[in-house]
Length: 115
Image (cartoon, rainbow, N blue to C red; front, top):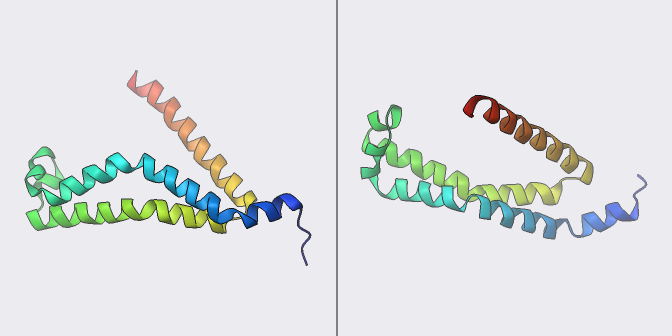
């Protein structure tokens, strides 16, 4: 039987609440892209806004693409909240460190190449 500390037990008892909180935060971050994807899916005339592959697609293909994006974006807060609720504290820390490293790299590369 593994030895658990009281901090691990406290986290596991409230992991559902942490998952719900993180899901709510993710939902706030993706609200605008979700709204945009939904509007593109329901208004096929917006296809003219895009140059390249999306403007060459059929109207049905364009709408299906944006509906898939809308569904994936809507599912994202639930998936992330569920993952946070089921992961251990150590795994969450490792994932957070990797995400932080990617964000730092993106900011540095953006500063180098954009400005």
